Amino acid sequence: MRKLPTLTTERLVLRPFLLSDAAMVQRLAGSREVADTTLAIPHPYLDGMAEAWIATHEGAWTRHESATLAITEAEEGLVGAISLRIELPQRRAELGYWIGVPFWGRGYATEAVRAVLAFGFGRLSLQRIYAYHFVRNPASGRVMAKAGMQLEGTLRGHFYRWGSPEDAAIWGLCADRSE
Image (cartoon, rainbow, N blue to C red; front, side, top):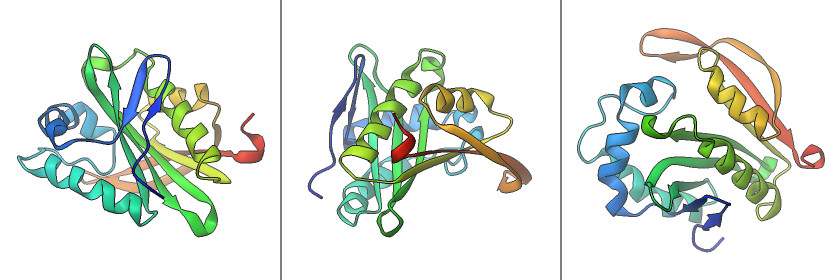
């Protein structure tokens, strides 16, 4: 695989992150509300963390491990992030995303998820794309449903976040069922 792709939708450009995005990543991803709905985003989000995270993207793509893209909107700029954690031998990937709090409820996540699903099934020739969300975050489930993913079940106590077990809903979509 060559360079990380750039994907465009009606309102969004999903592009590789730039180091110049780091301050906005720290501000948006570092909000407690965003960190609270994800497994991997730390809180507090300290200086240097965004730069270190961005620096991993190109190598992970080159090694066929993941594709991480900035979700941008023409007037707003950076609004979030989306990624596929790729498992090529199994032809599957785990979808993950976050949207900054000021941009919640505008449909950006759904639009970005649809574009990344098409990319995963098309360019990457994946067979399956799946995603988790904490059960206490039903908005993320609505995004997945609107993007055409199917709820496959609930995994009780599947994750541990901030000292508490978290139930997780798992969603999936297979290439032969994505149309």
